Amino acid sequence: MKYLYYNGLKFTRDEDTGYYLNSSIGKRIHRYVWEKEKGAIPKGFHIHHINHDKSDNRIENLELVEAGKHHSYHGEIRAITDYDNMIKNLDEVARPKASEWHGSAEGIAWHKKQYKATKDKLHEKVVLTCEHCGERFSNIKRTRFCSNKCKAAWRRESGIDDEVRVCVECGEKFTINKYRKTQCCSKSCSNKHFPRLPQLKNMIDS
Image 1 (cartoon, rainbow, N blue to C red):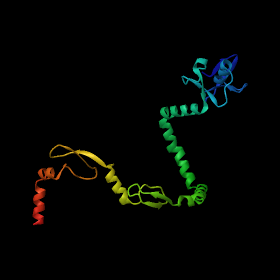
Image 2 (cartoon, rainbow, N blue to C red; image 1 turned 60 degrees about the horizontal axis):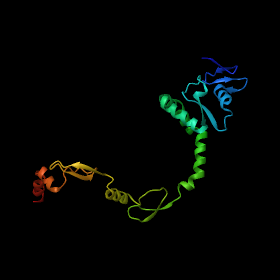
Image 3 (cartoon, helix red, strand yellow; image 1 turned 135 degrees about the vertical axis):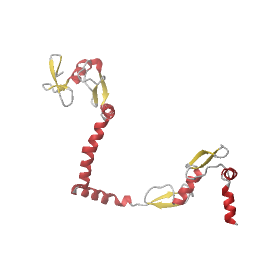
Image 4 (spheres, rainbow, N blue to C red; image 1 turned 135 degrees about the horizontal axis):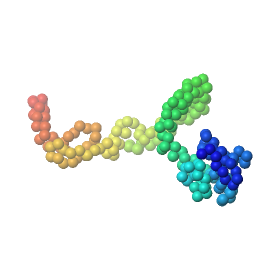
């Protein structure tokens, strides 16, 4: 509906926002109703439509909500109900404009200025302690290990890459690094399941 009436005043629907406004008093109907029924609206608070219907301005459908929580709530609702349009807007409008600006003379100048202001901090070395060997070392970025060797050793010892497999020979479960191709739980099972391998090895050795 285009118009709503309350307390002898006429409120007209704003097609952009969906709210009803009386331009003479400069107030939206939901705020006006709250003030008439409940009193002044505290600073930093909004009036929320409980059923999300902006034409339903009964006092039972209105509640006082902190502005920050109100913005967050409606942001979450939009993300759920209008997700496709939000992504479309990002892909077709926001990202192209951002890319265009970053590649413009103004954008390049801004990046150069930011780099100049932070380059010393970016290349500043910090003293760290290796989580595997305990040795202290310095690096321009925060890392947990002094070398790839220590990183690999830590991963092996921690078992972070381990997985449980079932032996193809005896059916028992065993734990093995997920990057290894081992199919048996032991050499004994491997020799039973792959009987030609020991023979081939003997032939090669002889």
